[in-house]
Length: 205
Image (cartoon, rainbow, N blue to C red):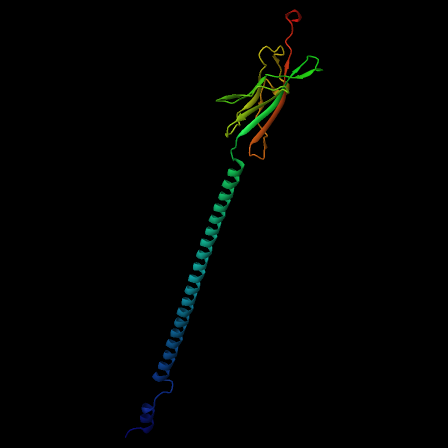
């Protein structure tokens, strides 16, 4: 005779048996899958956001470089334009006067027929002969004259006032500087007066 109690107990299924374990495992798998999906989705968002940020940085860097390069080009153009304007080479004229001055300095007489000159490292230019007012000019072609000076040169032929002096740097040479731009686009340099003294009689030497 079979024990009904033992038979019934062996034929009943445990409510917490294999089916409940399967459900728990499925839940766990779904949870893990959901976590992985969320992570992957967030990772894609992060990757996408990172790509956008990196692209934005590269674009801004390129625009910044282009802007800086443009500023450099503009500054270079302005510099070249400014220097071209400042270094615009034009003809020049030197003007001045030459006097015969007594040794006591009381008698100043304009010298007619005297000369001045502009001396540079590679060339020199003599002035026109002074007129009755002792006035001379020297015309110079369009060049730079940074190494040039203006000198008292020589008296007129037969003039007894022939002893050169260093008045206004007539002997040492007055640097060719500080021109005044004229309306006719010529640089004008003004010097002097340069001075000669009368030659002393031999008996007074």
